[in-house]
Length: 76
Image (tube, rainbow, N blue to C red; front, side, top):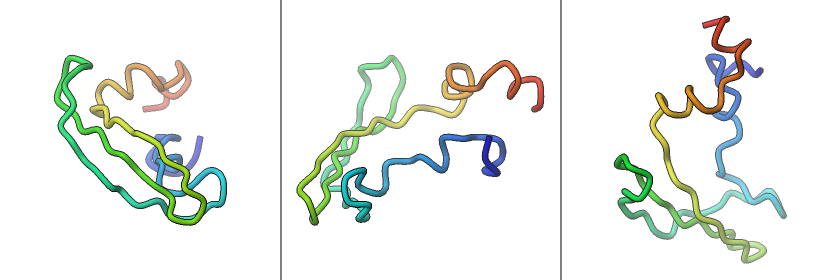
């Protein structure tokens, strides 16, 4: 676990291109409701190598339920 308040994924947000490590630019943000709760879907693009990806935000409550290990939950 890293030092970001116990949340390992905070240091793994999709901000840099996995191919060339250049900071990616958000080219589109839209509301996204298909998962049963309001969130945002973002399209991100790397201007250096033309890599593109989509991300979907999820509420922290759901992230904690689905991504924390049993050890992490006992340490909180």
